[in-house]
Image (cartoon, rainbow, N blue to C red; front, side, top):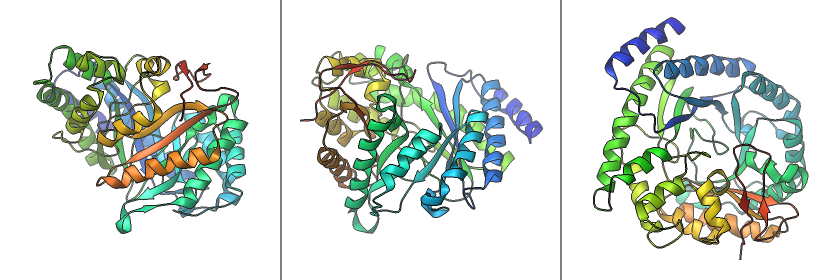
Length: 405
């Protein structure tokens, strides 16, 4: 297979323009169906494909930050109560091979298990890699909010905050609202259908470079043109990888995932000329998302605006300056993005308050057609609103704990 991929790579390099280095490939994510929690064959097959795919992109001049695997929902191939020893084995493989692993929803929609939070604590403490979720809404069947799943999600968030260092175990869990299969980004990722792969990007610096040269009148078209020019070679390679390997191509999640040196907050401020959270922030969020969802390439996943507070230095700084609230983040999500992501809130936030937040996210996900949202809340133990908090995780930045009310 590798020789075929390298041959295709030669063709691609001849056909494609020089890569745009204002963005990175955040992840190549392969989706697989496991026959059981002991199915290491499918995992190893995915790792082989991902390593070849990563090498193809590297040889084409792109930086690939991570490779990841998502499975179908855990409850479809295992009973969580018996699955932990086998999941630990899968986690060991993922850690050894430096591959992310997401096992989707632990439970079916609107199912509550009284011991699920305690089991999650064992999962968090006995594994290092695995990400997971619970579904809190779905647009199927006319639209449903899953109150039992919301109850379980709130208990999980609270339990993780009390049983992991600094509450950082919540980085691996999200409450998933109307999320489709085959999202490349974690922890909402889960797989459905034949084995396939998708691409997730880190592209805020690309937006910033466009907005430096644009105004409100030209920004939409300028961003569209620049993104299509930059992302089409990514898609060309993906299509050829799919043809050579037998892995279906899901598309590109065009969400501009931020990093510590690639701030979506900075990109928005470059356009608005105002600190994030001020007037015209909503307008910028809406315009950017319109572009992301209407590019002339195959898209998948969220393909919306990500506003992860503690993964973005500008967003975290503006939170420290009290420029916006948790409720305003949800307002911005109504016209754009992916929900509430890595939002630091007081460690003593009540379970009932967490449930109310999840209900708001779930309701918003059903207000508009096919709106995928998720909520990844960081309860910071021992901290109250206004306290500064630092994290052990190197991809998280110092921020202030945000007030809920």
